[in-house]
Image (tube, rainbow, N blue to C red; front, side, top):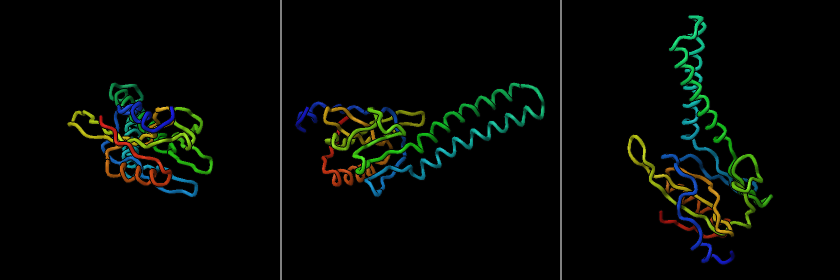
Length: 190
């Protein structure tokens, strides 16, 4: 594709990832070989809540069965709820420990455990800009804003870096990365 203006006109301004948290999920930190995003304390507590509820319900269901020695409705309901929280909690745990790294030593950005996944990794030299984009999420208790930080690549495709509810933090993180890698920040209108 080539020049920045052509890429800027071509790149999507719709959210790369739908949804998002209404709190800060990750914080940027500098490492020996670049930068990485680490899970925030709020994200850790949120994850622990899901896992804790899962184990509490599973424990209650198993204890109920051991006490009565039969599969009552209560046992089934409690165990089912526990299983749902168990799956969700462990998905959050995997997401919690999933690396988000800008590694200057290997010249790669990657998100996740597969460093070569083309949808979640790229050579640092392939990044032409950082994109900040917001969206309004509708929920049961009202609406909230979530903001994405995306990488814009030479072919006008994007890779999501983080997605959370603290715009100020997203902007600060983008400014740090922009200065370090000498790439522009594009604020998308959505």
